[in-house]
Amino acid sequence: MRIQNGVLITVENGRFEKGYVDFENGVITAFGNMDTAPSYDGEVFDAQGGYIMPGFMDAHTHIGISEEGFRWEGEDCNETTDPVTPDMRAVDGFYPFDIAIPKARKAGVTSVVVSPGSTNVIGGQAAVVKLISDNNVERMVVKAPCAIKCATGENPKRNFGERKGRSPMTRMATAAIFRKTLEKAKRYMGKKEAGEDVFDMEMEALIPLLKGEIPAHIHAHRSDDILTALRIAKEFNLRCSTVHTTGGAPIVNEIAKSNIIPIVGPCIGPAGKPETVGGSLAMAAELNRAGVEFALATDHDVVALWLLPHLASITVREGLDEDAAFRSITINAAKAAGVDDKIGSIAVGKDADIAVFSGHPFHYLTKTTAVFINGKREA
Image (cartoon, rainbow, N blue to C red):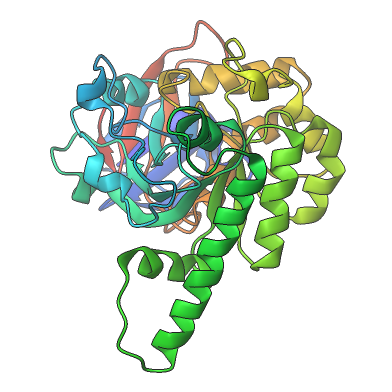
């Protein structure tokens, strides 16, 4: 298959004003300028002067586990009975028929991180999922787990302290529970490595985190909560991304020094609680000026996933470099989830997840003309 005659934005490997992409068996085999393209006698999709891009990726969503159009029946995002549930897996609550999936796909979104919510201090295991039209989540998964979802700030306090009268009632307790659990997991891992016959499913789930095989995705809006997340990650030598990071403006330099990939958003819509009041639409631009690579997120279903390119366009309006905006919903999202070897840019050997647009992807009149995932046309 060849897609041709469009402005090709590879994200990592240049821009071609009249470009093409070839793929076979779901994998990209060639790309470049049409003037130097080899002859091709296979199936061709003509972009007709539009834009050809890697499919968009959202670094933090609850699609499929907070189902659109449902109430409690489709709400499988937060196991609110215990503040520590690292053994919970997002894929076990994922509904492939969520009506939000085809809407997002039509907007050019081809993959997402599906994450447990932020009610718990440690909420469970996130997964990277491709938005293919399938009835089995196992065929949609790219990587599971891709991260352990954790939380600071108001949410654990509200669910356990305010509603249940139990710990954590304060930010101090949230941090303490986080530390206690990680220390317990370290000791458990030591026993296993020493050959002891032990088994604890919660502790097993945290071993990849402690070994640095997957990161912690830590819910943190306010600057003090962001610093708490960074502090604990440093204490336990964890890879991490702060999720939301909306109030990070006062500590941009601290974030830059941490070398994390912060996940920013949602930055559109009203502030839904006190910890989001200080959020800024210019947060992405401020991080970019500080040299920070970051990813954008809708936090679907807080903001509908199909609005991801519009969210990115607003950050450009607020001062973000356009190339950085493209990176934030492609390769940087993939890096934050540890799947940048497979998706996130146009490169030979990567999955053929490609979106074609009638015009500039951030223009309000632009339509998605085709979406390919694993080389198969899905929209």
